[in-house]
Length: 304
Image (cartoon, rainbow, N blue to C red; front, side, top):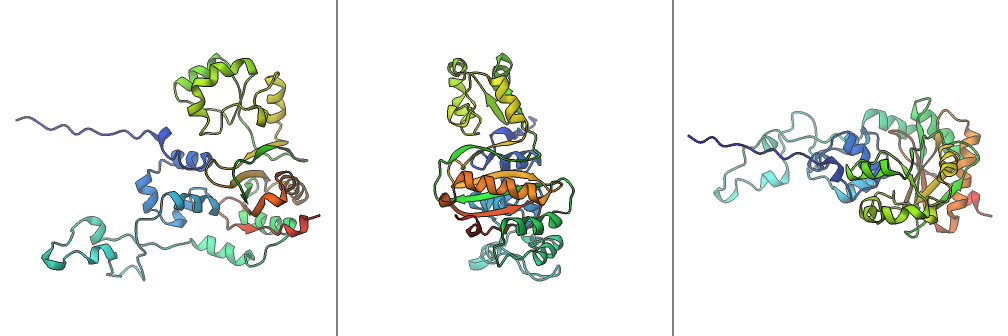
């Protein structure tokens, strides 16, 4: 008798989540979360991966939950509305594991709910007040403080020199033959790629790969320069931040520092960033840290 062989399809993680911001996509790939698993996760489970509230909203816009709310206690016998339609008109009821043991959605974690009570989300605080609320809530000595800005338009980009270090290590790559080998192997072990004007013809065929990831060198953001070595030292110092809106969404995600830094330093970085982006271009701005609620900022205090 001939035996059937089952082909297993390997997941190409590098191709997944091209429709999400690169920062979010990297976390989901590292955690090995497949799209079908992502839609089955609760909001609390997604946040537990190390993502922020803004990241969650972006994910849900592309990958909405497919499981309706399961309610009221572990002994509930209720099943999803879809399952309730089965069995009518003499149709057989599904015997799948999903309908026999429906997944229950518990919502936010107890830790998250406790943090919400400590943070006043009904009133937008000043920049310093927002940081003073967020840093204790983060509960760690060296966690990132992230800024999420909703702008009025897409296509905004630039570079900001902040007065204090952001505490973030930026992986800067200077284009070489080694870079070509890595790109041919679909490896992207850098956050910024620097090149000279003479290198650009060699990079042209990789534009379709580097462009969507925001890694294609561009004179507008200072990654096509005559002296990439000097530029690499400047960018690696952590005192300059490159920003841009998402390709399809008017949102900017930035890291402005660490919870271990002084509040005055973080406030100075935050003030500089918001002014450089341009207050008239900003619709709203939020601060978050690792697995904390977001804090909406009061931008009226920055107006001249």
